[in-house]
Amino acid sequence: MADLFFIHSNHPAAIDHARADARERLRELAPESLIDQIDGPGWSFISSRNPFVPYSLSSDPEGTAVVIGSTYELDGPQVSDLRVPSPARREQAIREYCRRLDYGLAISIADHEVLVTADWLGLYPIYYYHEDSAFVVTTIPGLLRCYDGFRPAVDISGLVGILLLAYSCLGRTIFQGVSRLPSGQFLKYERGGRITLESVALGTSPPAPRNIDEAVDSFDAVLRGVVGAATRETNRSIYLSGGLDSRIIAGYLHQLAEGELTAITLGDRRDIEMRAAARVTAVLGAAHERVPINLDDFPAFAERALESDGMSSGLYSLNEYSFSEAPRPPVLTGFLGDVTMGASHIGWGREPLLDAHTFHAMFSSANAWGLSPGVVRELVRADDIDDVILDVWRRLRDEYNSYPGPPWQKSWWFDLLHRQRLLVGRGPKIMALRSWPVLPYVHPDILRLVQASPLPFVADRKAQIELILRKFPELARLPLARLIDRRWWNLIPRKAHFWTPHVDRVKDSLSWHWHDKFDPWEPRVFLRTFDFDGAGWRILRDEARVRADEVDDWLNKDVVLQLIPPASTEARLRRAIVEATGRKALLGAVLCCSRYFS
Image 1 (cartoon, rainbow, N blue to C red):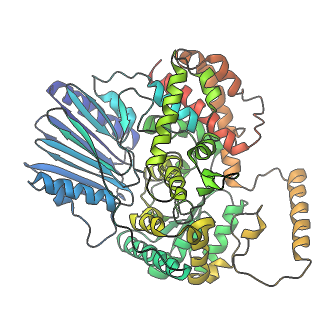
Image 2: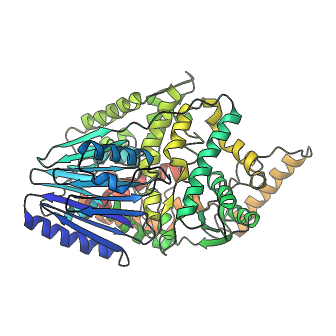
């Protein structure tokens, strides 16, 4: 894990109690973790981390600074820059960390002010709470209970956002008075009690590529630089899923690292993803570690998720907890490559009839993964529920319209800063429990390059596909983990007999019927583990139904029981993964409200 708890208060007794309680809880969450504690006049700081976390600490009587994560740049800011006497220089340093961290956070504590920021996308979660006599910053919402003055109460607007989108939005959480630091900003707390949020510009975009060759060369230079720097600082291993994103990173790792490589894949030997990943490791000569996913562990994983995340990121996936069952050196990942460099979700914001990008289309696509406004209206108990839903919708619309660039980039930014950051983005934090993920695709240089590129160069993952074809042709020849969509099986064009596609269809059909009749194993790991009818999710469904009475003050019990069927009943969802995500958000909201508020 890599977490922190900071409190400033006018009452020494409150600090003493919070410090002792936070330290104990952090130790319970990870008994083997390394803990640092630094106390100052009117404040206390505690951090907990596993041995693999990139961690920098600088402290003296003048102040304290901590950085979790790395910029993977030789000329990046130093932690000592956050401790200089000049307030202006400290602010400049915190801005640089926001721009350059690919994943992590930075905090500067001085006598008169506190500065804190995360990576520019805001993937690393930072929560803060403020009242007249205290200010608390933490990476785990559950730790807020360590402060005696914190009285958990439901934030109806935050709850509505979670149910509509399956994750928190607009900086709100399920806890009243608790906010999550927005992306691209740093927080400044002054000892008089004033809090300000200041925006950080991503930086100047490079010149737009004039053709696909320049685009591929530019992306290649950035990824090669990040992976090369990471291999100098971290272990030579990769989290390999069998898809395009991690395969490209594996290619760079093979070229740049010295010594034996290790690839880690979640799932079973029979899975499509595992088979695709195994062929990649065979070509690269890498060791292949298979990490099984036990669906019966999901209730325990959900319990940990509610404590560490408080439904800020929903309950979309619990798979990564299997990865964190054992300590592992830092790993490179292909995380978010499809939506950053690949721009694969920009079509979500397109109105087909108008051939234009609009917020209405984007919200409709995002809301498909949550519960409809009509369902939320019947579900949440609040006299002004219609006004709350409308307010959330309007603020999301205003945020969409505020993004810079051409219309397609508004859809790209909205998806990246909402669903990818908050729902999908919970994965790296789980991996950091006992390891540390390196995320080349979210490096700010990649974001700036996509922002500068014309749409035809990045849409439909064109730049990614061209890059693997040109730089790693031996990997491009291997099948990707996309059994259903035949066009992804071979990226390199090849001559085929006229009957080949027909023979392939017959083989696929026979294979499907064989598995359907004689082998019930679902070979798609994502479908097997995300399935709301899976063993682990059935246990959680029954637990949520039992607790429905406890949360009836906030969530209509009758609607809850209608949307969350008992374990003995099939959910029978038309779109198994998409529709289940909203039900899981409701399930998590029930368990979270029961845990903290009942």
